Length: 370
Image 1 (cartoon, helix red, strand yellow):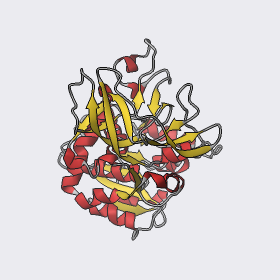
Image 2 (cartoon, one colour):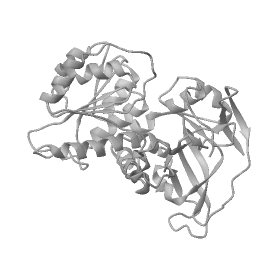
Image 3 (cartoon, helix red, strand yellow):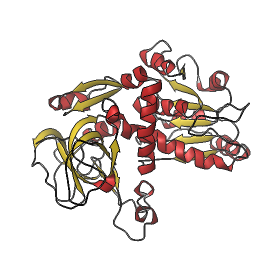
Image 4 (tube, helix red, strand yellow):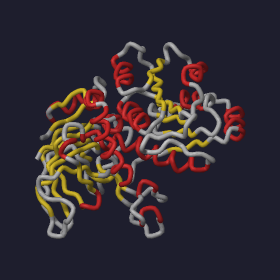
């Protein structure tokens, strides 16, 4: 079967032929891959910034944003049957008994760093025709979401951020917005999303769906296609070309939450200085190490203390975030069907893998196997 793989030592990307997997254990599930999203992580792996093959292999099959159809199940599988749609989680537990997170199957909070990730770190990914997985790491997906289900995994980034924001903001003496979108009367919570890539746009939809007054701050002009897309699901687009960071509060009002989706550290810390009392700032991007930048640490620390602010980072996602992403993607499709479909800018055959992995066009490009 076909698979897209990187060979780090040779610094090559190839379309390879590898054996089709067969069931091994009673809880194994064999999945025919339908769609695989191309993301920034894939492109960085293909630029050889990171990405680690499994032990004993000279290559890594990439791809971690996937939707597939179950074709066969082991004798002990109870949650899936052939014909079901399924999404697979990415991170798998470390082997250490002293890691409390992995022992509780919350490997997204692994303490040791010895986890593995499909398509990223020491475990082959999903950019291939068939994969085998344990049912523990899979979730069923309604067939009504087939056309957009490839967006579930990237949406989990925002869902995990929202889960953590809800938990952190329980410290406050009033109710924050809840998943049903209800706010305390007289108080409107403002969320600023940094970046209008797929992670930012999906995050903006998630925050808008959760009841926040949502603003997307990005480089594109306010008449751009992305700006129109943002406005189509009820959020406000703010162009960095027109509104400098120092004037962001004038457009937004009090900033209660920032969801960073750019990986631009300097911009992030500039925006952090604009946050309001009791605000939560969520980092999701992983910037390249470009060298030191000047940051007014005294001002930031003083403000965070005096304003009761919280700064947190979040990576990967647990099962709860995948469940929330499946639920919310269904709500997006009902509320904003045209907008959610526009996130996917093209589906391409696997033979065009090189153009998709090394190019930059589009919001979310997809390799289509099915």
